[in-house]
Length: 585
Image 1 (tube, rainbow, N blue to C red):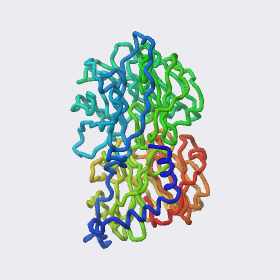
Image 2 (image 1 turned 180 degrees about the vertical axis):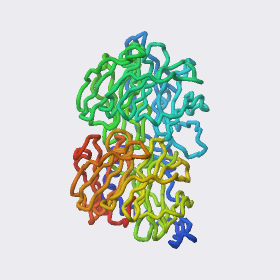
Image 3 (image 1 turned 45 degrees about the vertical axis):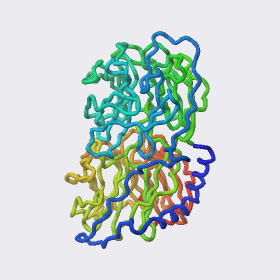
Image 4 (image 1 turned 90 degrees about the horizontal axis):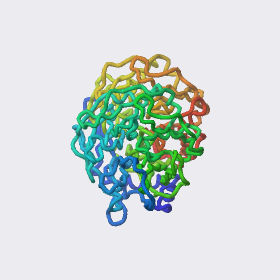
């Protein structure tokens, strides 16, 4: 993507986007529009709501638009004899190939041998053909076949192993459940010195667990062993591969203040990493740091880092965990949900908002990774008059918001009625609150009691018996949430009281007590007539907040991972003219 094109998108988001929205929506064929129903539970048949984007913006010539890539020059010196092989070399040329998932959930690979992008197909175990992934891990050669393997992580904690072909994977070779207990899983390369790639996984308490490789694709990992604690201080953990040419995997981490640390692999199964060594500061300039393996053929794994405009930089390893000055690698990476090998696990299940116009037309905006929406918005159907709607996070395997309609006492998911007793004044879908990986709903009744409704993860989500969260919730005039605002990886809830104070209720992952005690994170939020949440809109895998003034000006509050009134950075003007919409979810 050229800098002029990125500038045009920013200009649209800053004001002109809404004129385009009106034009695009009013130009939609009337025959394609679902007819609005009557708000009567016996006759209304709501539409299924908006789907995920199915295609990327086309470049001239009809090709998909992919980020630009400027590969580093090839090194000419000798390669350390012990240096590890690249972990995700899918075309067999000895260089790792970059695999990405774009905002529309299309997976693509940049093949270094022919220097071009290709769509990349990953075999799915989910019966839903539109199912997506929470993360993809470049595990390396698990079975000793000289071919790389790839791991996928599902929204509900299923880890699946494939052999990675040139433009597609094999059928699944192995799957294991229960991985939703971790907020970060890393493919590190071989940490123990047995030439089998290993995994590290961090739980929500900050403890680190090692899964040693077995050398078998049918049972690729041994049982876990605890190898550390206190790892919750890092907001990025990068399985970097072999950074120093000794054949062992290494790890980089970043703290919230932007300091980068190097953790050298030891070859020990009980203490796989040495004490950390500082690499440098200022790394919070980048929203994602990626372990890209060896980019120039010198045998040392390098890093990639994406800045907040979507520009990618290459950092050459020079030994001992030290890095050379950044070199330009390409632009247009704001289109990516994630890059395989990234130091964060992407926020799952939203990345979109819906605006309702006066005539009930729905405009869908997809979040990019640079603080903006993709523009122009997409016409997404009609809202049923009289309905109460929300755009719930992570209810199923499709990795985008689910349109939820409450009409009378009926609740509709994907246009199908799933409850006839939904007698609540407010419904919110912040994500998985019970710890099973499947998104849930919250509701508030007229008496101010808040209820939790555990979801089953199905496309047309069914909900288990409601669980009482607490009383007194009528003291809040806004409840919103889409993912994690505290930095621990668990979905949270934001609540504004009538005096304008904003509170954070941190998720606990426990159904019987889903929230910790409230924490005030701001004041003066009663100046806004609408709070709405896109999930992550600035590419750092933390949830963000958008707030609209009555005059239509919208401000963005980006999450920092910090606590108290530092939970959100200072507001940034996002755009004008947003009073076009009578509701935004």
